[in-house]
Image 1 (cartoon, rainbow, N blue to C red):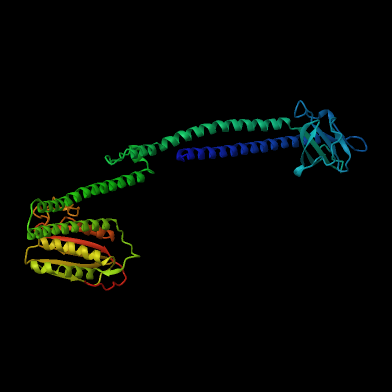
Image 2: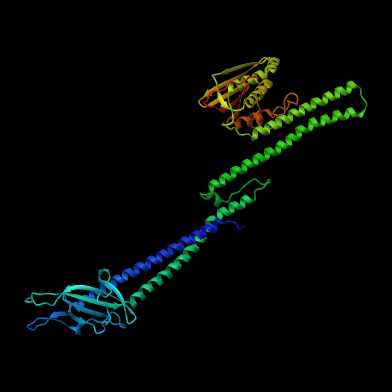
Length: 478
C-alpha cells in the first residue's frame, strides 16, 4: 500500500486551487470582455440608427411628406458585409430601407428585451436594435411630428473574433502565470518542508547508544516545528532516563541477588563436603533459611517497587482513606522498634486529611520514612511526625535528629539500591529501596516528596499529597 505524502497532498491542493482560480479568472475575463464589447457594439448601433433617422426630413412641397436622403447613408461597420436598416413611421408606412434588407425578415425582427436582437443573414450573424425617435429635420410651420421606428443591424463576426481573441490572450496569460505560480509554490513548499525532513533524519539517528536529537537550526527557528522539537527532546530525555534507570535497576538487582545466592550456595556446599552431625546440618540449614528469607524480602521489595512505578492512581477505583489513620497504623507497626531504641515519637495533626488512595500503600510510605528516621536518630532522641492541611493539599513532615545527609548523597537519595552511608551494611542499612518505593507510591497518587537537609543537625522529609473534599472512611490500624 503506497504511503501518503504530506508534500504531495499539499502540492496537489495548491495546483487544484490555482487551476480553479485560473478557470474562474478566464471565465470571468471572457464574460466581462464579451459584455463590454457588446455594450460598445450596441452603442455604435444606436448611433448608426440615430444617424440614419436624422436623414429623414419633410419635403418642401405643398403637401408635406417624409423623404429619406439615401445619398448620405454612413458606410457599413464592416467592409465585407453590409449593414441593413429600415425606417417606418407610426402608421407602419415604410419610409426607407437598405438595398440589402433581407426579404424574409420577420415582422417582429426577433425582438429581444431592450430592442436588441440577433439573426443570421446570408449565413452571417447579425446583431440589431430598434429605436423610436421623432423627425429631427422639421419646419416650424409643420405641427405634426410622427414617431419614427428605426431598425438597424450590423454583422458581428468581428465582435465574436474580438471576444475569442481576448479569451485566448487571457487564457494564455493565465496559463503562463499558473505555471509560474505552481512552480514557485512547489519550490517554496519543498523549501518550507525541508526542516521537517531534516528533523525526521535527525530522529532516525536516535538509538540506544545515541539519545541526542541534534535538531537543525532551521527546525529550531521554525515556529510550527519548535513545539514538536521540544516535545521530542523532552520525550527522548524521559526515555533516556527510564532506559538508564532500567539498566541500573537490572545491574543493581543482579548485584544484590548475587550476594545472598552466593552465601546460600556456599552454605549448602559446605554441608555436602564432609559428613556432619545432625546439629551441624540443622545449623547450616537454619543459616540457609535465613539467607532465603533475606532473598525473599529483596524480591518482594523489587516487585513492590515495580508495581508502584507502573501504577497510576484512579480516583474512581480508590477508596477514601484518612492520612492521619495511615500514619497511626505505621506507628503501631513500628512500636517494637520504637520501644527498643527509646526514641520518642511526637505525632501532631490538625484534623482529618481524606485522600483517595490505598491505605496499605500510604502506611508503607510512612513506615519507610519513619524507619529511616529511627535508624539515624540517636538513642533517647525524638522524631517529629507533623500533619498539616492547606486547602486541597496535605503536608506530612518527618523530622529526625540524625547527622543529616551529605551534600554529595542528597541528589541520589531516592535512587534505587543507593546507600549513601558506607557504614550501613546489609544487616543495618537495608537494600536502598525504601525511599525509592516511597517516592514512586507518592508520585503515583499525584503527590511529591522532598528532603530538607539541615546545615547543623537533622533531616526533614516533606510529603505533599492531594486531598479530596469527601469525608474519609474509618481505617483499621491492624
